[in-house]
Length: 296
Image (cartoon, rainbow, N blue to C red; front, side, top):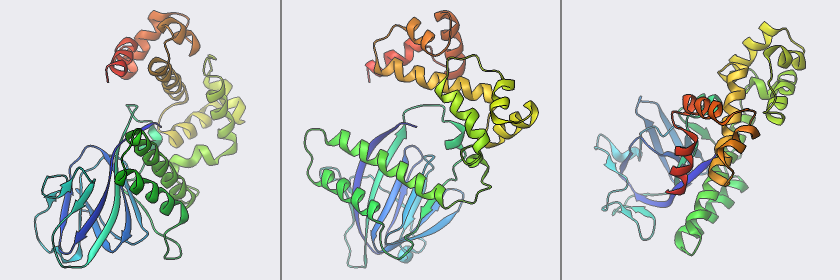
């Protein structure tokens, strides 16, 4: 998983208020003070209070509002009337109770998303276990606020990296609290499946067969294939292909290696065969991916 943080902001909102975030970038909200409701487009609503963190991982459109907002229509969050871009501040005029939030927007660098990310719920809600903000949330929020309040050379990169850290730490905290039978975590929690997964990751150039991987897991071919697909959302050899192309994408965008050398580095004997398979999988040729990165 690779993220690109787009922006971070502070919000100081006086009751009553209702804000709308359109579909697009994924979003993280950390409540510093006060409380509000987060509502997804499908009507799902969760209540967030001080210390809570909400991650909207799929870029789903959503709205946030104070309890006093009533039936008021939502206002787009990043309109000039609401958002001071020079201070990265969302605010409104008012005398009501204040809610303070630190928020961040990000996008995934790689598309399509791996099945593990696709399987995440539409919103992930972390609550403080003892009614105080956990240390890691306080620290990350402090860094984000510092960068937002005191922009300097490298601020955009810092914000992107901090959001990256915040999202990964959120996912880790969330997965630690999930039941053991959660399907998409099955591979990570299953030691025998883990042996096969490690082999794929460590030797992506090898021409693995399902039988060989099943042998590493100590399972029959059919049982292994069924459990792997259930855990990761796709068959073992397609997962292997995705992993190879993930490595290839990194090499295309972060090195000057010729495409032929990259092809051999991920297990293809010919550049033409690699290019055809890469384009069929991603919808773009390797040369296009490299060109887009150079001109971004």
